[in-house]
Image 1 (cartoon, rainbow, N blue to C red):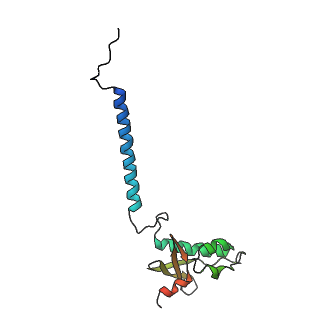
Image 2: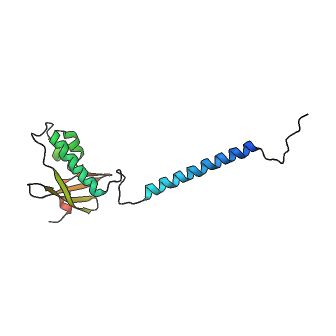
Image 3: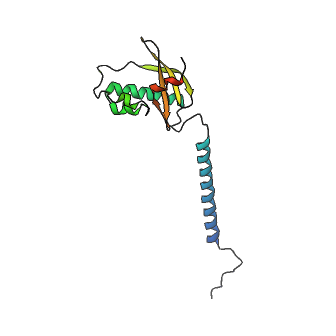
Length: 150
């Protein structure tokens, strides 16, 4: 005859299930905590792959000139703020006979959702370039010049 299980002895399979559930809950809470910390940390870096605003305005300036050089009017217009997009409606879809000169964007200054920087090109005089933040993206925006005195 088989003895009936003792009701005062805990069932090992129930204990193992509880341990597994507890571990899963702890891992889920830890993952949530790490995600929240990453989301809310260091507001100086934008959600754009950790690129700072200064890096993003430089990126969009290069995106525009690269696209214009190649005759990619659609990409070039996408790099322009909505307020100035109509100014660029006649961009050529033909590549330029030679690429635009390489440049560096320096001395970037921000005023809220607007920015300006100095374009340095070898053999050319320095020039100013202006940007505006449309939603989450910085765009080339000549009309933002009014926000910067001088």
